[in-house]
Amino acid sequence: MRRLIRAHVGIAESPEAADDSSFRKPDLQAIADELDVNSGTVAAEATIPSSFSVVTASHGLYVQRQRPDDDWKYSVVAFDQDLTQRWQVDTESQIGRSLEPTENGVLYTVDGELAELGSETGDTRWAVSGWANSPRSPDVLPGGAIYAGSDPMKRISSAGEVQHTLPTGVAGDVVAAPATGNVYVEDNKHIYRVDPTTGERRWSYASPAEGYTNIASLPGEAVVATRGNTGVTVLDVVDGATGTRKGEVKLDRGFSEATAVGDLLIVASHGRIGGYDISTVL
Image 1 (tube, rainbow, N blue to C red):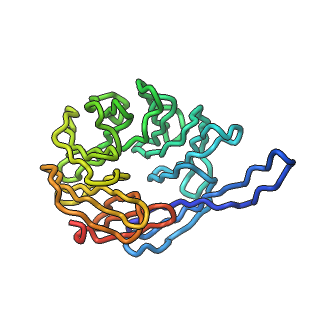
Image 2: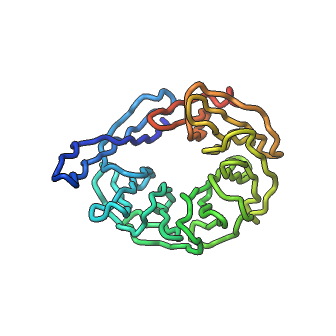
Image 3: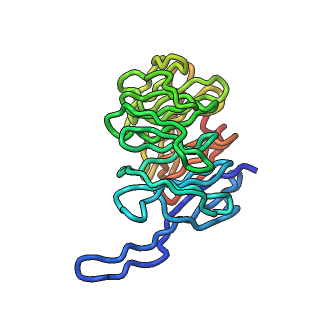
């Protein structure tokens, strides 16, 4: 049975005034729901410390949250499947970025550097630097290749070796077509197809309206980009082989994220999640 993890924040204790100029920080907690993607029903639920990012993998659950000793910096924390804390790594990062699980641990970014933390101890397995600012949240493709950074965006092997750099201006969310391995990048205004071996750009497609917020790969060598995250969501469907527009789908609710899971397109935004039959999109 296919599962999907959703996290949302609650307040375990309300702030209380300490004096005229300060108040005690609320004890925030996150509720992690495990959803059956076929029905959307909650299969399991657990309370974890409030976090900026929550990801799950076969080797554990990982959260990024504010450091207990410094509200301006973040920690990466690993939990076992029973939510027993395994380790905590306090970072110097002042920017919250989404975590990304790998086969051997979890990726995080800080101060111009991308690093992989090992699943067992949280020790740094490798690190790649060379960006002026903290690189954007990484994407891990089937086979383990990693895309991270922004101008330049780099393709990095699962061992931390830089394989190539993408052309200037080509940076954003990255997905790959499962059947062909073709790689697609969305940068808010365009969709690009890049060569997975060299990083060269093969084609580009410009958004006809407001900027994109997400991209997903669909069966049959197609990609879908999400735009408009309030009121109505528009999904632009593009032929992955040629970059030509195949059509658009409008959803009557606001969503900003999309991902393909089997024969379903899962869409989500703040407080909302839904599943649509992919055949209705294609």
